[in-house]
Length: 267
Length: 267
Image (tube, rainbow over all chains, first blue to last red; front, side, top):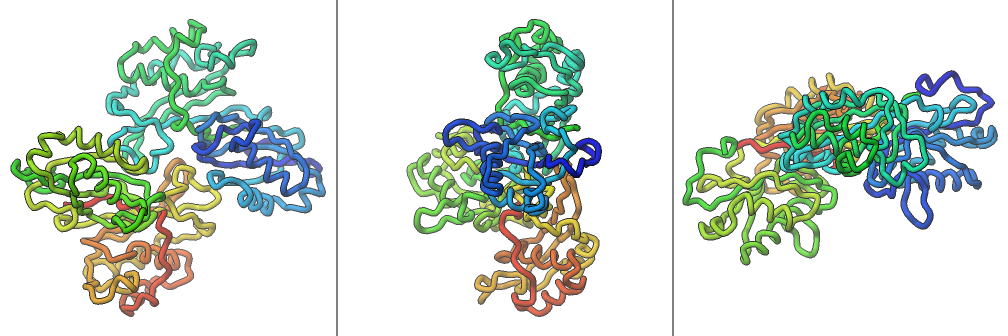
């Protein structure tokens, strides 16, 4: 429980589920109308089967269609009787059994009274993986943006360009245009760094992006913009200029969903 | 070409393709009768479309259904006219375009006259990945054997047990029984080692298994046997006793296909 706050109030029925998923088959995390497969839909359907009532859930990060999660957190409230009826390890196994194969239930814990996976979160960390299309890491195939110009990426330039974006700024230029209207678009960017790593002996560029919270498509727009700098198509100062323009059209393209992973949530 | 022998004879039309694949959708590498999806079937179908004739192919390691490859090698022979008609980079792109999504064409090279992906290979290296089912590495989900008793694996014991199996032995105890009849079953085991590594911050046990060549299901039977030692269910001397028994029933279970990857072929 240490990551999710103080010791749980034993009278609280708030539960926190930590789960991984491969985002490929899902139309995103958030439940949608119609028969679309969503992570929240799978979880709430399973909870309804188990408790014979609607159990509303809240998540730390509403991932878009095709975006993956390594450690998403979802909270919901159960009654004392419901918890007695299905102790947490049993609940974890039941949720695993009743949800789509691409979801892995990693943990179910009691949370302190008033805990919300969304509102109690202090920060979210995402990672974005970029790989080379020809020496493609087999195991990353579904989890990376493959590029034929991968070898040309200058991560020194990308890291240099990231510095002025750290801290609190209006990130409206990095937000999906339709989602920004009439909403606060200031965010505190805590980390934006790029490193060349090897996974399974294959080179991969890993972007670590951490913020208090994110705007819609913010990580993917940052990545799409910084790749242009890494390739030398744009100057190191461009991402900050785009930020200052407060206009989505000033920034680069939105990188594909498949490279993005909600890595962890900090409480 | 350095890995595949001397400089190519320019009169030779032998080509060597290096490819990766996710084995999940395939009924193995080898072409089969009927409409079964196979890696060889995909390659030969593509070659037939390109050259309007049957182009027989040979591979370095005939992986079973569900087994993956990081760098499988496949060879075939083209005429001088065919090579002129489709230079190698064009051929690589065409093969990529005409084969199943789970296949990645990494390279197409000219090989020396007489080169065979199968018979010219000096050794094959496989890796087998074992992960923990609850802290499951998201990106390894389709490429590992998940076990709830993962944390208990004692790789020191497994490495100790591996020593007497190195070198030339009759591995019939580690061969799928039906495949061993009437065939030579001596093999030279060059490496069998286990290490605990972290991929994407998650613990994983990686087995490296290298031999001149392998018997049918040999790697998976070794893994199934050594996991019993790692868990303390069997003594360190057991895998060698099973070897000496020259009886498939003396060894452990066959580990699942999804954890196995043909890692590289040495020429």
